[in-house]
Image (cartoon, rainbow over all chains, first blue to last red; front, side, top):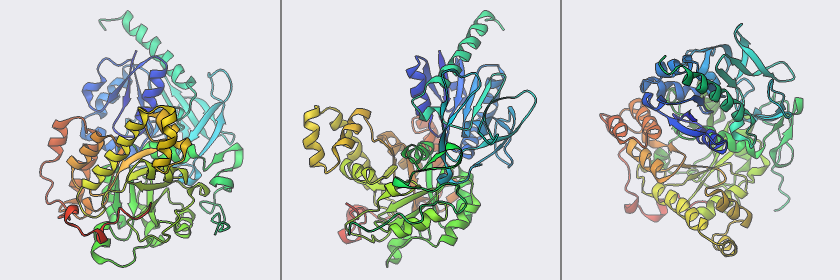
Length: 200
Length: 324
């Protein structure tokens, strides 16, 4: 399976390494033509303002929207979550696909970055190591969005809307492959469904 | 000297619900761990593939963010002006740094002098995201660097070769940059340092285990870090290029040589059209493998910074030799 990783800026190589460890073929996406033949797409951590500016300048915004709307699994981590969101509370370029309101840098500055164990709905085998770096949070979600993980105080840090997955934290900075494996299983299902209707 | 206590209040932002203990790490509410190496190095990983720009005013910072910078370095004078004006170069006024922090949403870095842990504590206290213990400022200690393990805030340090990079990492640096020769607009020293660090790693990778002990001694680096670097095939932290980068082609050159991202100091705001040049350098850094794009963004940028030829510069004016 060929999985794209948005490579405008950020920790895309870490995602590629996780995908390769699970036997998938990672592929860097910087231009619209790089989206061809992908079974899924990950938008990494980094700076969401940088993503937005580069995506706009190189004509990637509409092709990325079209890709995600085609039903293929699309996952945003941290800045990638911001880039997927409908509302980020300020004027900045995003794909606007996920019906969530996001608050950037919600925990404070770098000094307030933290790690903690998370219980994620649908993820077996115990807590997942959450790495939060100048992380955003999901302040509110629309009806079509399912919350997958909240902190003890109720703060939403992972959610899903159909084929869209979003996490405030960085599974790609850990040694735990479970989130990436979960995402790849969804990509596999979408791939099989796609191959049943080749002329669609 | 050994009982100098660097660990002050041990807190970051005033309202932080945690207290940093040993090694700047600590436990917060809800079982949260803060100030760990993973978090300090992790922020640098988020900056990869990006451009960090020197800015001296909130207006500059806004231009940098608009151009797509992934972070800004807040300071009173860019290195070119520090060179020109001479005198002692110190940490910038915290009020200026705070005004820049309030202007942008991207991470903000600031410089402290080599060994000046009080300046570093001040920067940590105002909530800076990254501290550059920088040879561009006048060193405060000609023997000791800051014990960076003691801080909750991460540090970036300059290096000219692998030994220097690993010494800084052993002191707690969470990110390394080439020193280059700041404020010159001449990329030659950044190239020399990045090639030295990356070339040293390539040689290390080809060594037998028993050769690594002698090599660690030769480059004056801790053996454990030498071994870790050999196993990873790269530095244990992110490596950026810095010092003299002034054009999109310079940025693409450094990315091709193998760094993870670039700092641009005087090169942007000492040029004829900072907004356009800043944007072009960001684009060239992302698309460093696509020469048509690098060519396209290199057009019509106006005057570059005038620059100083490093090979014609007297030794006494060179700053890369500061730190050890």
